Image (cartoon, rainbow, N blue to C red; front, side, top):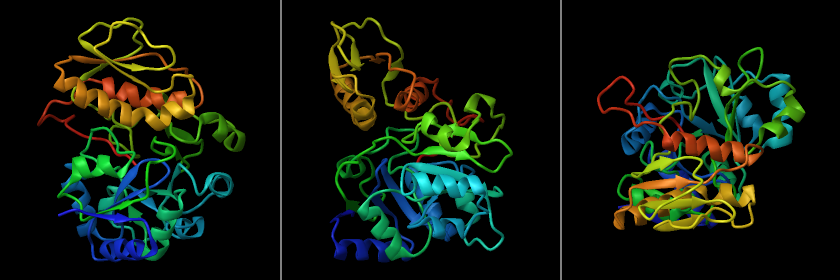
Length: 335
């Protein structure tokens, strides 16, 4: 039975105790709700993979209460210190070489020589991490490949019975997963757009390479596989027209003729659109299937700032689905 805990000091203490016991606790950050487990315990981390039906060779993001705590597990560079000073706490994940003394378990890192680390923003999340006093692995609290949860109700609806408790801190303010940047190589790589924009990163990093330049077969970071964030309905991108058999994910002025409409932002505000993206996909998928609609048609979104993160999620949602049992039957990470 999943317990809903309202975010107060007693509930935070209870959630921390559950995590230290090896239990699963979903908690809200500024990005999405994470499915938390003690990152130092293979058994606890295995519960994440079981609950999400997630491949075990995908690395997870470890969350910390401070940059000092995070950097105790990795080899920080000068650039990492500058990024932490500017963007932590916040929606930025850094991938850095693992320190020899790190206690983060191999299952959380997929056996890689690097660790993905983040200090999330949010009073409740930081209080929980401080109370735990250990790194907490926390991909998004949803079945793998499905729409990420931006409030506690989404977690309860999709993960009831799979998670021991949900620490309810209200809706997430950003609504998109963290930006992931790989600092383990000579040139920084932007592996996943997110709540910190490419333009913001460039003010600190200078030249940054993008995911198209990054050649690797197995994922080294959260969010690197193509088919992800997938609703049950197929997704059609860059819709300029729509018909009555389709649900419309609108941005700005809506298109006529859709069987169902959800507008990310009537005013064309990318921050508002980002915060509403997963809730919109979830609504159109559930209600659209009930009405017998066939497709979610997504209108174009500007290709700058948070628009890049929104487009990244939509592209993954629209990608061909993996064939069950095949070599590509994988789900990428979130957090």
